[in-house]
Amino acid sequence: MEIIIAKHSGFCFGVNRAIDMAFSEAEKKDRHGRLFTCGYLIHNKDVVRKLESMGVTMIESLDEANEGDTVIVRSHGEPREFYDKAAERGIHLVDTTCVFVKKIHDIVSKAHDAGVPVVVIGDREHQEVKATNGWCGYSAYLIGNAAEAEANVGSLKGYEPIIVCQTTIKEELLREVLRVFDEAGIKYDIRNTICNATRERQESCAELASQVDAMVVIGDEHSSNSRKLYEIAKKNNKNSIFIENSKNLLLNRLTKYTKIGCIAGASTPE
Ligand code: SF4
Image 1 (cartoon, rainbow, N blue to C red):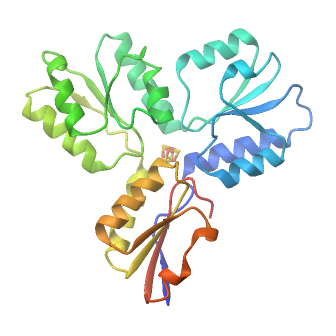
Image 2 (cartoon, rainbow, N blue to C red):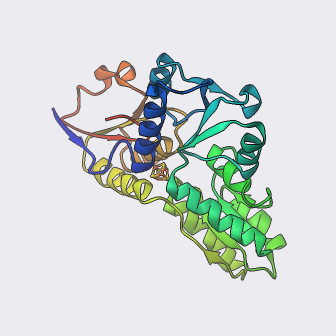
C-alpha cells in the first residue's frame, strides 16, 4: 500500500506560534498567579490535554481569573473588550492571536471608525468571527452562505462595504457571496483575508484526493479548517474519511485500497 502525504499538511505558522508561546509561558518558573487559556487555545484536544498536564487550566471567561493571573489569548482572537477588561482587572495577557487574524481586526476596526459597513464572510458561531465582530462594535454583517448574502444585500444598497473573510473559508464561498453582491449591483472593497496556509492545504487536498483510491483527513472535529478539508476531499474522492487521531483510523476500511492520500488540518500535530 502506498501512502502519500499532501504537500501542505499539519500545523500552520499561526498554530505553531501559539503553541510555542503557551508552552514557554507554562514552563516559566518565576510566574506569580495562575495560568489559564480562555477557551481552546487551538482546536486540538491532545495539545489542550498536554497543557493541562503542565498546570494550564482552561477557563470560559475572564471572570474566572483574578488580578495577577495570566491568561493566554487563543490563536482565533478575542474581541476588543476582552483586552479592556483584562487591563481594568490587572490580568496579564499572553496574546497568541495569529498575526493574520490581527490584520483582520485592524481592517474592520478602521472601517468601523470611518463609518464604513463591514461584511464578514464566515461562520457566525466560530470564535474567529465572533472576535472579529468585536473589533467593529458588533456591527458586522455576518454572511455564511449565498442565501444569507441575498438576505443582506437590501440593507447594503447605497453603501460600499468592506468585505473580509474568516481565514479558513473556502474560496468557493467567497466567490458565491461576491456573485450575489455583483448581481445586486453593490460596490464593495474586498480584502481576501483567507489565509495562505488554508488555501495551500485546500488546494493540495483537492489535488491529492483526485489522484488516490482513498483519502484520510486528520483533525479535531471542532477544527473549522480540518472539516473543510474533509468536505474538499469528499468532493474529489468519495472514499474519504475524517479521523481525529490514530485511535479512530479504521484500518479495515482501508486495506482494500492500494494508494491512500493523507492530509492534516492546520491544528493537527505532525
Ligand atoms: S490557519 Fe492561517 S490564520 Fe489560522 S492560525 Fe494558521 S496561519 Fe493563522
